[in-house]
Image 1 (cartoon, rainbow over the protein chains, first blue to last red):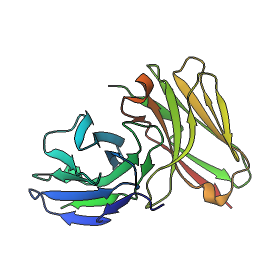
Image 2: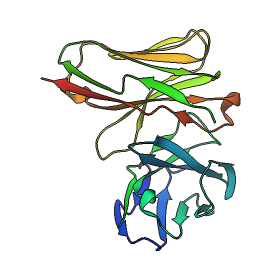
Image 3: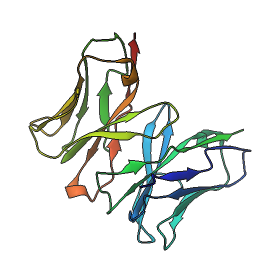
Image 4: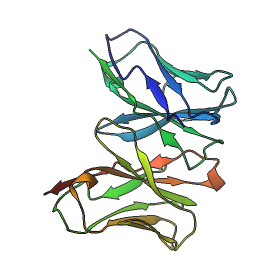
Length: 113
Length: 112
């Protein structure tokens, strides 16, 4: 079974730009969760999508948004990038909503300059 | 919001030594999880605990779900160089319908 695939692995953007990250879950998994990981704050939950609907949301500003497609693939978008958005963005897939047995991808390392 | 206090923040040990790390919370969790993250990779689930008082092993790893449901610990016995990485605890509430809350991690360095 192929694992969770995140693309791209690395990204450099300029302040003010917007960025879209992609996550393909494990085949058969319908839930995709997104996390931001920084050295200072650790892993912070962004949001979760299940069956193309956002089911849970963390405490991030509206600049952070996401969506899920009918094939369960998910994208997250960050608009008007700030330096503080530099982080490792991880997605996790699981069969059901907020299932504890979630599998993480390798992440996308975003650097905002 | 809920927070998990994970300690120690980092550990430097010799190969063969045992390791212990723990997480505490001001609120109750119904599930405790322990993950390991290698450099450049996403976290990988090591052990999941679902019942207060539960003690579960996975090879050289042993984790316990505290009786109060507000804490958990992870032990690694006879450490080896590949144990190097960052270990995270995570808690979850409400029968699995709530988001995972993560600790800030314990960075483990094993000297050969």
